[in-house]
Length: 265
View 1: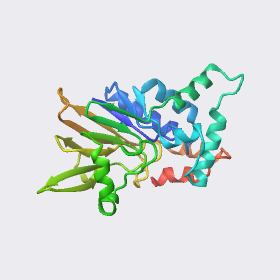
View 2: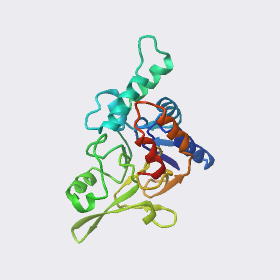
View 3: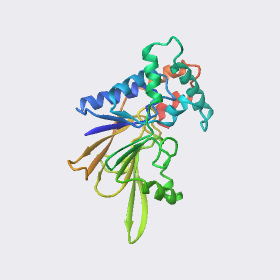
View 4: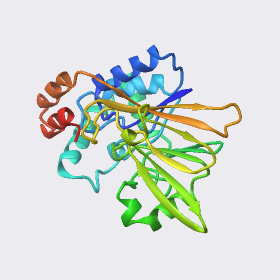
């Protein structure tokens, strides 16, 4: 059994609440699918926690942009990335801890395959930047066909901040795709994965966008031979008001990054 978190976005209060839930559940292993930074006020503390608690961490598009140029970002996100870069980038006389944080972000891998399981931030086609959206089921089935051709069994992603499960079904020589949000998976918000291919968006810890302010992540249980798995979506209530107050006090973070935490958008 292990937990998968993603899209923390420098929200220390949400991350701390999720890690407490994981510890209380007795779960020892955590994987992070990226975007440790961006939007939020506590990138340093979140990097420290993720680097010390997660078995591995995947590179998100905000993590990537901090190390380079924030192209293809809206002005609000770009401003936070630039402010985060100034905060994190070590100078000539910076401490060893500051240099270690920078090295951690710089060294994040774009994807990880373990057996038949793939971990990325965006999609199998573009691990860092591509979005896989619910609307793709109707409007871009060819895209999903290409995405699923790169999946052996289960692919875990983040990036959209919208949790859910994409499934591939083959009937009569025809391939179709469906998407189910956690509330569409039954009372336990879980799915049993057998031989079918699935792509699971684990949701966002630090900035949910499915109209639910609670931090979101998944817990995965696999059988001994890695042929079946149970993926369960978890939500954790946290006090977002301190995060909002910290955002509002920082000049280079737009207040929209605070207000959206309350409404989960």
